[in-house]
Each structure stands twice: as C-alpha cells, then as structure tokens.
Length: 390
Ligand code: P1T
Image (cartoon, rainbow, N blue to C red):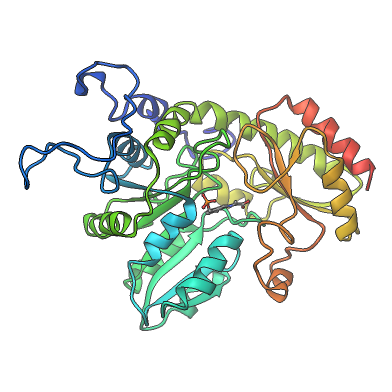
C-alpha cells in the first residue's frame, strides 16, 4: 500500500482536504454541510459594475468554485480551473500559445490528445513534435514554449521522470505541463516534482463513477492562471454546475478508491503475469516493470491501470478475448468503479497513424485494463475464462 515497500509516503492530510477544503458550511447562509447546488446561469448585481462574487455562469459558478479550489489544494497548488472535458483542458493549455510557437509532446499519449494537437492545433499554426521522453532536450528549438507529457503514459504505462524533464524545461525557459490522469494527486503531485501545470481528465479516477466528463488545469503560477481563466471563460469550455457538484462528492472517496484500485490491479497483474497465454504485463507496481524503482521514487502508489499483450494473438484473438468478458466491460475510458477493458489499436489510439503505433508497440494484441472495485476473485476468474476462449 502507499508509503510502504519503498514508495513515496502518502500525502498528509489528503483525505481531510478532499472532504473539507473550501467547504466550511458557515460560508453559505443555509449552513448546509454539503455545498448547495446552484444552477442559476446569472447572478444579481448591486449595480451595473458591482457584484458580490459571481456575475454570469460561464465566468464562474459557486459549485465550480468549490471544486476548483478543492482540486488545487489536493495537488498542493493555489489555482484550479475546471473545463468541460479533459480535452477541453488540453485545448485551454494549447491556446496559451500563438501561431509559430512550438510544443513538444511525449509520443506515448492518449490518442485524443495526439489528434487534438496534430489535427487541430497545427491548423491554428502551432508547431508540434511528438518525441520519446528520453529525447525531449534534443527536440527543443528557439520557438519551443511547452513540453507536454503524461506522468504514466497511455497506453503503454511508461513512467515519466518529471523532475528530470522539469530541470530541462527550466534550463531552456520552457513550460512543463503534466497530464496526470492515470496517477491522480493521491499518488503523485507533479507540481511538487517541478511541473508548471497539471492536467487531469476528471472523467477518470478523480470522478471515478463513470458519469461525468470533465477536466482540470492546476498551477501555482498566477500569470498562467489568469490567462487560462480568461480562456476558460471566453472559449466557453466550462462544466455544468451539477457535474461540478458530482465531482466534488466523488473526490471525497478518492483515497479509499485509489487504495482499492491499487490492491485489485496488483492482484490482477500478478495473475496475468503467470498466465501461459500472456506474453507480457505492464504495471508500474510490478518489480518486472522496467521503471518500477523510478516509479516508487515519484509516487506513493499505483492506480488501476494494466496493459498486457496476449501471446501470439492477432486482432481476431484480441476481439474474442474482449467479447468473452462477462464482468469486465468492453468500453472506452478508465478509472471508474467498473472494470473496463479495451483494444487501444482500434479504440482509444485508433487516430494515431499505424506506423507510429508500431513504434510505440500499440499492437493488435495489446489490451488495456482499468481494474475497478469489484471483488478481485471475480475479476480474475472472468479474465481466466476469457483467456481460455483465445
Ligand atoms: O475524455 P476527456 O475527459 O476529454 O479526457 C481526455 C483524456 C486526457 N488525458 C488522458 C491521459 C486520457 O486518457 C484522456 C481520455 N482517455 C480515454 C477516453 C481513454 O479511453 O483512454
């Protein structure tokens, strides 16, 4: 469990902050223990140029405000901003830059992020290079403004050495943004490790109940926050108040859920590791993961993500495996209490060109599992029976 076996210690006061930060009941008139839901799209002013705190629902809402502040606290930072999706948050960050600016992006990232940067941001004049994380420094140019990495990559679960990349970013006066969707602030806080910006798809572990699409950007840099706040409002990439209410509720059980995701996923990974039909298992908590020791220095535990390769399988075999699953659900996404399985080569990473997928080992026998919170014995027997069908 977190803090043990050589991992970083668990962050102090995390569960208390998840439950209480910025939610003192005395701040709202009703004294409600749970932050009241405010659906109103507009707020009465004292005069044309004077208002209490909120003016219009796109520029700010009480439920969004509570969530943004609470999330910033959990990442040990000052400023949080919520966006209507993880990709919305990514678009907000990309919009900090102008035509001619260069962004270096890790090459193993979520397919949608790759597509957004490659197909949309390039049309707006941004220059994008996708590079292996070990080659970032050599990819820096005069016009480089941002390095973007995923702390634990999607889908091959490479561990990114955030302090090392932060040192490169600082040396060249470039910003570092870390998408930490796969790890969460409960296990890792990229700002403490030197990042300027953190992004999470809240859709995943953070909300954890597979019923909200949302993203967040977090920073300690007031100037970046002000620019992003302007973009959030003027681009209109804002979440609904009820969704903010739901995520605020979900966050309260994040520590409990993450501990159980870690326990279940390690047991499943160990089962897969010994299965004769499995060629290779990737999970940062397994000693056989090539960066297991590095991961323990950077995080206090592991989430529910596992990637594995079925031995000698072609597309048809992987499809048979996935459609034979009875408890684990064949679906996009990750991080919820349901266990999900998917085939990145035709699902989450289908938009990545085939030659690039080959380089990244995103082959048709690579299965991505998001281990949920069901009884682990049931998950293992489900995987066992589906592997028998291959
Ligand atoms: O779906 P959305 O909330 O827009 O989040 C996008 C996103 C950003 N970053 C990472 C690391 C992600 O994995 C995602 C979304 N990923 C999936 C839907 C998936 O199945 O991998």
